[in-house]
Image (cartoon, rainbow, N blue to C red; front, side):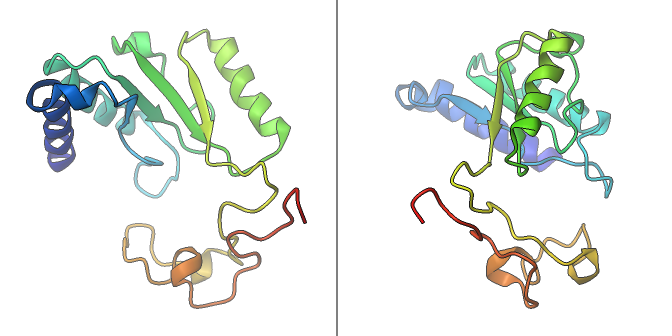
Length: 173
């Protein structure tokens, strides 16, 4: 966590103090991609505490860029930002399920919570092609805490997947 805090302190300092002329071109900081706690695979309170440290580090530099925080897989996985004193934040979710139901679930959840936070639904494929590789099961995946890319993703998978990255028809085929 300390290294991540130091990284965001460096980035924030760079765009607010070292090279503020470049900071005007930065729309938002996306703090962590698909953050999960241990092997539960969802964003939990432990992740919120990390978000809070990163948020405080960035704001301590006088940096008012939008801070994006992502919730994994469960649309209720992010807290009310007011509980942490977070301002100028955006929540985001990666919707690997391209269905309208998935998008409606995100928007309905946030409307019901009245968090008053913009929501970005990203990493989905309106083209109809899969934006991920579908495996036969967890048995052929490396341990969750193993960050080696061998055996992961379409590029490094050694066994044939059910459906490879990019599988499917596009609007033009």
